[in-house]
Length: 174
Image (cartoon, rainbow, N blue to C red; front, side, top):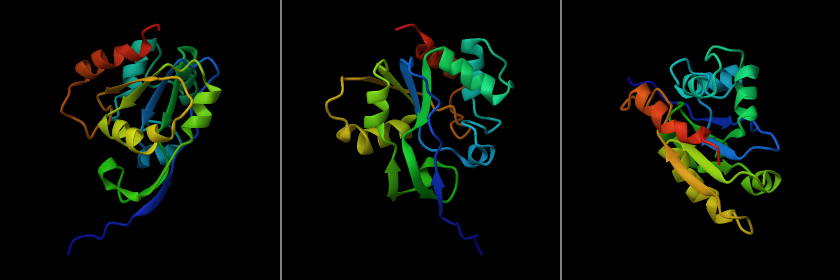
């Protein structure tokens, strides 16, 4: 008999931010390892922190505060498209779309007027943003959006070196 998958409510984290942020990186919703650790991209095989360690010059295994401070110092804010949802696993494909509550981007972007570019950590973050967030953004300057390859270990179709190359764009000076 197959195991029954339990759908549970999931709540995201507040953004990693500072007033000088010029770039916003968006994931979908933290996975189980991240929720347990209360840290963005905590799964040991997620390439996010190794990529940014390489790009910003810190140790990938540094304390979480060091890693997040490095992002902030580089003008990068980090958040997720969703504030809450229900799902059975850490996979984006398991999100129950009827339960989606997006984060408040109108307030966030008004408080961070220097953000001129949003980078999506994978296609699901982009799709959810376009469906649940973008239509509600009115009276804000146009912000460029760019989908980058997912850093998730579930996206194993691209080697680390190619992901690193693609993500370099997030750290270029605007």
